[in-house]
Image 1 (cartoon, helix red, strand yellow):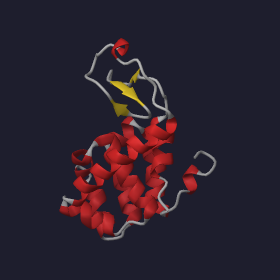
Image 2 (cartoon, one colour):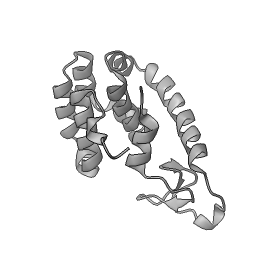
Image 3 (cartoon, one colour):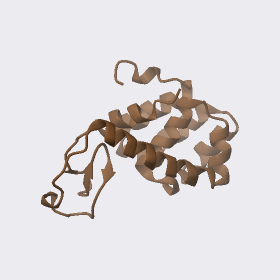
Image 4 (cartoon, rainbow, N blue to C red):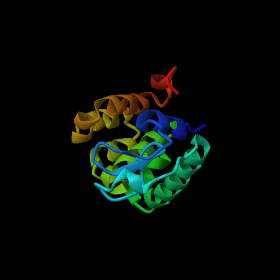
Length: 155
């Protein structure tokens, strides 16, 4: 059973009030951008309860899944993934966008070939892994194992 919302809430953190993300975008509810870079937080006077944020994320993910299914290589990779591995690709799409995930051609090709160790190695050999090393290590371990064991006690 997918645990993508719990994974995203861990990886993105959850703050019910608007905040500026690391790039300066107004953001809320665990990584959901709500305005242009540099916009004042004074423009956003609301809170997003956790349940609402989780539903919002699920809606975003449904759109990502549709977009991912429209890309042949991603569709073929998803067909080889169990829930944990699918959640890795969804988390990456949430963070990087579908176009960003498409840049991981070696990873996606390895997944299609069911060479999950190679896929994990390709993930770790990337700018993304250097920029978000903890998340990348956890996701690579999920890709290798096909389980959520790396998140035991964290979700």
